[in-house]
Length: 623
Image 1 (cartoon, helix red, strand yellow):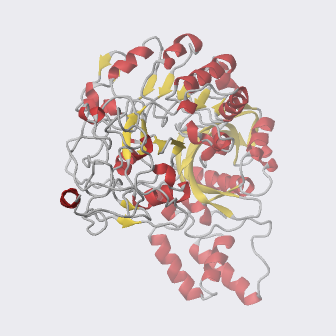
Image 2 (tube, rainbow, N blue to C red):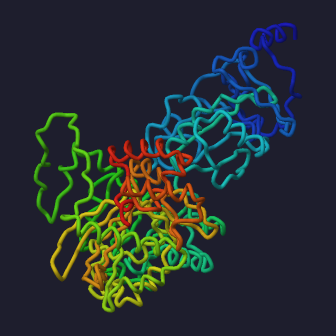
Image 3 (cartoon, helix red, strand yellow):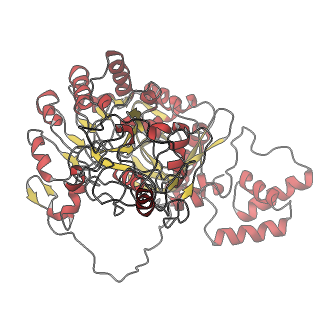
């Protein structure tokens, strides 16, 4: 007995008395080598791994990995185990060789190789073809989810949301659908110490998608999806915008996940298109993590008129996927920000136009940096035309920016026509500041149907002014106007006007966004030195940074029926004299005097300086 006691002391010099003697003694006798149940198998805690899964002698005293202690009283502290301070690498807790490790498979249950266990700190070297990764926490059953998930998030370098968090036997499993997130979670292994002093181990493996994502959408879900697609459909353009549809608020609020890189979701979308909008010409599928185009091959027969397909910001890795779209008669195909683009040194290697290689880009042999000449001012052709146009524009925009545009009926010919155009954009127009104008945009680059082109034209002055009344209320910066006369004859005057404006809401406050416009008026003579519009073409876009900086520097005078309010006798005399000497009309002369506190000499000095700098608009001199 004494000899046996000495032998045991030599073999187990750091015996841990925290646990009770073995309670489960099943399997002894004919089944030696498995004295524990499955829940005790494969326990690896601390820096060293024992045969029976206990912590090594340094696990509590020395922390070479910079571990963070995360204690929580809500944890289940009942699970403790004895350990052995020595073991052989590559063996499980019951003494058997871990074949899955030898064959390169992780313990997370994912398919295929490329996964890593807690000992592999180099990171995930193989990306999951499905895009999904299964995260496994051995013995995670004893941890409260409210402790475990935040504990991992606190040290994980990438924010994440666990998908399908569940417990299987003693292990906790959940999924993530991003390679960077999976890699960051893998690096969290051995970085957290629980309330018992043991390390939390994290296994990460490439995996098939979670089971609930592979199931068909329920009938009620399909109805919500149909409503969501209807909201994103632009009938005037025959365009459907499904950009990043998985984050659509209408679907998220109903806990419906439409993931277009899943077969069932894509098939559901194509079926809705086939049954409701088979005449679709433009489809935006960007930002949906699409990595295969098998289902899109059905568009050839189900959406025969499709001309534009946007697949940018997806996960297409090879140009072989594009073979599945050969039957489509596409005019535009967007592929930017897909991995397949990185396979080519430059765009000319994979961009072709109508089957022909694009010619090399045309450059300019100029010195850099080259200063661009400043934009010149307005061009009228003659002073007589200048006076006519400026008087017309002052009257037109004083009415246009008022609360009632109905008096503009007098400015249009009985058979007048009007069209409005906005730049084409792939983003959802409802989220853009141009959304109010987009629905009526007659952009000929996008509108190919002749019937639709005709419908978007506003004919007769009644329809033109009725349409203008429906547009948002505006405030134009008259000082920003630049006018160019295009054609001038005895019977016709055509000119272009450009500038900036901002919308005005009901309470009279302006919106933050500033917009730019370009407008072509084709007019004919009317009355005594008047103009009548026969054709009006309006183009609206968002203003540039420079245009925003220069806009509304000096507030435009407010139109009123009495431009000269009641003034004292000395002020009236000063105003008349200042208007005569400066050449400005009474309204702008009064503004200049008021801004300078009715100091005639100072106002004259400021006027001379601003006129020399070209900062006084032409409308100030119309009397």
